[in-house]
Amino acid sequence: MSDFYLPTIDISRYTTPKSAEDRAQLIADVRSCCLQHGFLQIKNHGVPLKAQKQMIESCGKIFRLPREEKVALSLKKRTCRRGYEGPGDQLQHEDFLPDSKEGFYIGPEERGVKETAIHGPNVWPNLPEEEFHGPVWEYYQEMVKLGRLLWEILVQSLGHPPSVLDGFTRNPGVFMKMIRYPRHNSTDPRQYGAGPHTDFGGVTCLLQQPGKEGLEVWHAAQQKWIPIPAIEDIYIINLGDMIQKWTGGEYKSTMHRVINKGDGERFSCATFWHGDMDATSPLNPDDNNKETVEQYIVNRFSKQFSLPTGNVGAS
Image 1 (cartoon, rainbow, N blue to C red):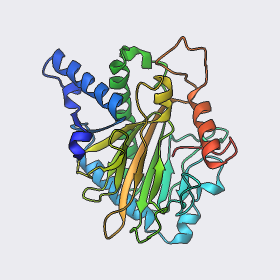
Image 2 (image 1 turned 180 degrees about the vertical axis):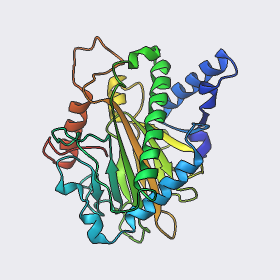
Image 3 (image 1 turned 45 degrees about the vertical axis):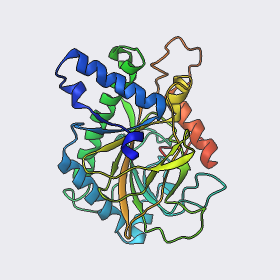
């Protein structure tokens, strides 16, 4: 059922196609997923398996630090939304309890700039370079490349040439969230690891700890939640609300949630690839609405989390 609902797309058919027809069919397959689901799985994406494994290991290192060390890195202490977010710090909707997950955010490394919710430096734990900062930053760079590739396929699936991204990918806002879900012990139906929500922005690339199930996607036609497997070297890709808005609802931003179904903790890493913060929609340059990516993200976060517009970031 899951594979039927969420097709697995072989990205090598785009990066190293056997023919022009093969690449065109790949773009058509991605379009079909975006029209029907707003979600897809991808393989042969170019991200080294070693980098994926090191990222999952890095999740364990940051979240197993003593509580006082994590709290010292809290994003609540900073203007720029980077750093640690504790259990219960995020509420998706007033009908649910606060999420049980923990998170750790990084983004573009911007030192010497005036700090805002979007712009500023990352914060790092006091761990050896080779154990955390090195592998995490290496993985982040892989995500910058993968997100750019996915956007290139996406715009072509909408009938645009890749060149429309020239003014959209010069200095993209790429925000990454490392996540730990504790064992789900609650019997309260309002409690989730991550409550039902859609992502706010552009393209989301999700790495899941292999074999650790928990992600579920809402299937509107069947009116039920569909579990998505956590398979090694497979990424889950989904579209955010900004893309749904920019396509006039043609491409879908779909509700999803996480309930940790294993006996122990569960790690994942979500990367949110929004594009240049000062850019407007590359899909419709003649649109009179000149809202920038940053303005859109700030407005959505301030409404969702009742935060001042100067203190928002990536979901």
